[in-house]
Length: 107
Image (tube, rainbow, N blue to C red; front, side, top):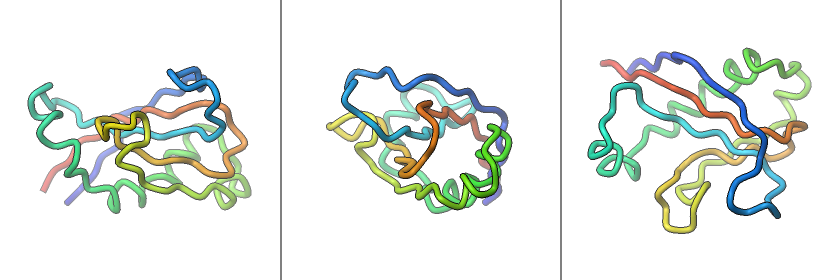
C-alpha cells in the first residue's frame, strides 16, 4: 500500500466542543464518494497513516523537537462520540490547530 499526501490544511480548534485542548489530525481519501466514506470510516489504515504524521508536521512548520514531543494516538471517536470522525489526537502539540490531510491510496 502506498500513501501519497496530496495536501493539508490547518484550522483553529473551534469545533463543537470548545473545552477540547488537544488538536486533532484527520485523513480524507481523495476521490472517495460520500457512500464510500460512510462504508469505510471504520476501516482506515491508521497504522500506515501514523507513519506519515512526522512528514506532515514538518510541512506544517513544526520543528524537529516539537515533532518528537507530539504523541499521536488513533481514536475512532476523535471528532464525534458516535465514531463517524476517526482521526489522531495530537497529544503534547504546541499548536491549537487541527490538521486535515488529503491522501491518495494506491496498491
